[in-house]
Length: 305
Image (cartoon, rainbow, N blue to C red; front, side, top):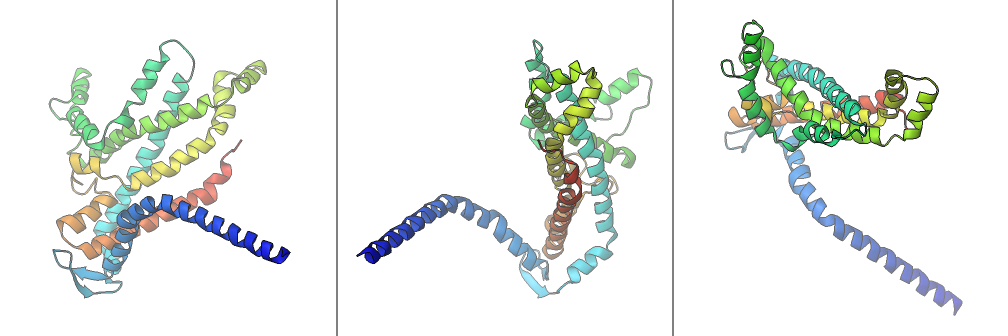
């Protein structure tokens, strides 16, 4: 009798576990379907196309193995886009984080009217890439733009911001750093506000000045947020496309042709979907490698409370 009850209890427990698992998978099903349609299938299709030549309609014409990758690494366009992307990342990621950190440090105090500045400094996160690009296109206009207007008032010569190869990437980087500063500012301000006042009060009692308190105490406590923003910003920099497509279209003379824009040109302008897929896989591998490097070496310096 006891054995029979034990078997019934085990059977009931298994049914309960099965019901819980079924309910869990039912809740996950919509997400799994969306990931399958918009992420997993395109990834598998890209891997498949990267080993083939395609016609302008995207139909597979011939299997070429690793030839697409071989041609890729032998192409000067590939190395130029990689070089431009690395420069773009170095120009935008530190600048965006430093701008957000500086604004957060200036506005985390509980002074009257500070909420207005917080609203203004967080505005870039609410603007789309296309809207921001149009605004900055007007600012960069060689004759009617505000930047050249102020330069003329200072007696300086006008700058061809988006036409001169020397200035084009810098101009795009300034705009991108401004776009990223809103998101960075919100997270860094939240991180600063999450640090208890008792820590600041203790530092003040010990005779620590505001700069020493910020750099020696508050900044290490913010390191998890800074690390997160660094990882996300590097990913975003390697995937930037919209502002470059609207403002410069990769020009002049390829000076702003970042990696994603090369993929766009190869796949949707030249209709070389095989080479474009190979480029996309290389981009995926580079982002994966950079993320691993950051977690492997940079995270060691992060101070978790």
